[in-house]
Length: 391
Image 1 (cartoon, rainbow, N blue to C red):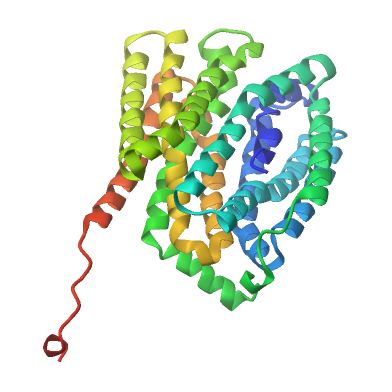
Image 2 (cartoon, rainbow, N blue to C red):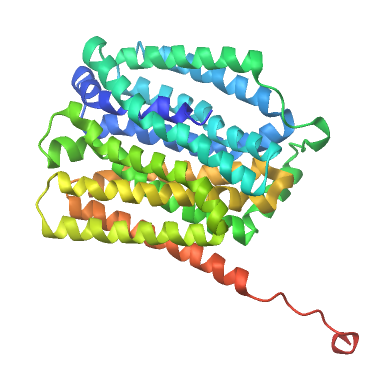
């Protein structure tokens, strides 16, 4: 389920230049097919948790996959960018279910260190797709044209629909389902947004995720425009990011057993801060070259160690409304990814130093959010008032 976004975006990124040439449009126009997708994902993810809390995980996911398959199939036949924009909006509305429902199912069944451990392995699978999906998209585009990318997406979605129809159990019992009435939804969303731990840890996670998204979306501009390489060398950006994430997710369970969550998270942010600093120094001191891709490995390594703690820790105090909480968290993630694809990346990708500065700023925001959470946990609980004081 967590790979739905990867199939819809990472597989398409290498095909963007070919789409631009074939449809006779600018690079900015074709770039908006990514941005609109994430905008729709963000909007839809805000509601999928509530719908899944009311209807169940299985039914909600199957309906979303059906819509995604139809929109992907229709994209094969577009002749104008406006048609593609509309279909990408539909794809985003459908694909938004994947991350929300996968996290909801995980927290239906597990909590605490078990949930963090499993989340690291699930995200490891998601991360590993960065080595496969862009390469698959580039290969399909080079041999059969960009429309074949949407044909492959259609086939993948149909396969997933059949698999989930046959083998996915419902993990939310009927006695735990919530009402979809406006009043009940309002109370559920308000409770989530009034939970300081959720807000702080989700903000930190989203800041880190946006940093990675900026580099992933900027990969063609970095490889072709700044490094002077061929478009097929886009893997030069994806490989260090993917290897760093994979290494971090694989090491995470061992670190969690040895250090517990607090020290592990502190180590992750030390790595993130150091990597961001090295990235800035390299961009300032040396002209564009392969050396500037090295910090991507260490930064991704630190991100992978932090992610399970931030995501699971944010959802932990909201176990009675996990779907709504996962929706809010995923909305923040997708909304910022849309900003990264449509605004931040185009503003920053003309210069490696600008990219490094942007990543450093986002890392600082995430680090401050985690610091505020640690300070809140250190505060002693308020002492109960004595009867005489209350009087």
